[in-house]
Image 1: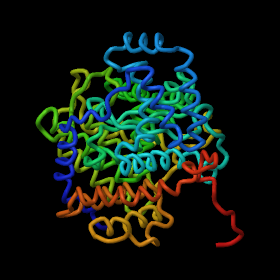
Image 2 (image 1 turned 180 degrees about the horizontal axis):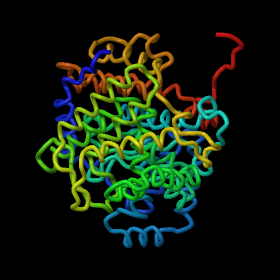
Image 3 (image 1 turned 120 degrees about the vertical axis):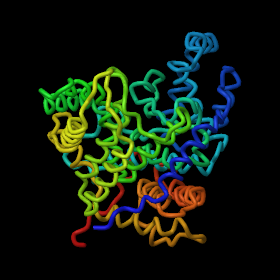
Length: 447
């Protein structure tokens, strides 16, 4: 079994670092009410009917109801734009950036990846025997901005404050041009947070399962992991949807951020007990354990590679100032991964998350074939793209960028050039109301 080629990982980390220090804020915040309303009217026709009905119309109705006074009051009450004002302006940006063609190539590619990841969890073919989520059934809209917050999502519970029926996913504008591994993290936001918040009771049930599975573990790790279930399960779901590229991508992305802001490209080994995210080093072990549970043949080899990279950054693990021995940390991550992937859940009609999404040999074969084209010039043969999804394209880009002497910016540009026509042919962005293009497939009698 061949060891995965990640010889170019350090350059991929440097690519993330450069994107992180870029600081481009993107389009200015639309904080003047009447100007915003005019721009929204002019932008609506670039949205397909699905999103005009689910996002534009309800959002503008709310703006009309609150008027200039209410709009300005929201801005004054949230001057840092981290709460309601930030949400209000982010929804506006999803409409405006589409309508005004901001970073059009990257925006359409970004939208296609997010739509694919969301649809992969909701399509009829993958979700047999599991009802649709209780709240969000329409893929998120995307936008660029807020580089100091990094990639993030406003889930359906948040956007529903403005009667909007889709989540919002953000990336820093620099990632329209570089920082490839941030794209590998999109599974965490979309196949993770947005899905977890769309099914009533899913997060609470997962937290309970994790707490029970770790009952009696030292250092109160049962509570530690369970209390961070939103971030923990999002890491796992991202890997289920994008394969090992999401796992090694997280490690590279975290290293790049640490290099940008703390000077050293290493995973953090310490953190507070009550922080939102598990400490980096535990997330590395979680990624390795999750990849090991995938069904493709190279899962063990990729898992070992991810674990070895995590151990390369290993120092003394401290949680809330308390030292955690390495084996306990590794064992806890393994049990958490197994619980999230394999436990049957009442909120999913007695199905497990790993039954709905998995990374199989045919996924890895598509990625392998595509990745060979990322370092070449010329048109990508249509037969390689046929049957591939946006998640495959990002995974293939990560795989290609990791190989010896890969030109990362060339790979990044090739990724966008493949994603763009995928978006242009996505039925959800056509004249019909298609919320889940994955449902459009033939049921044959024989293959």
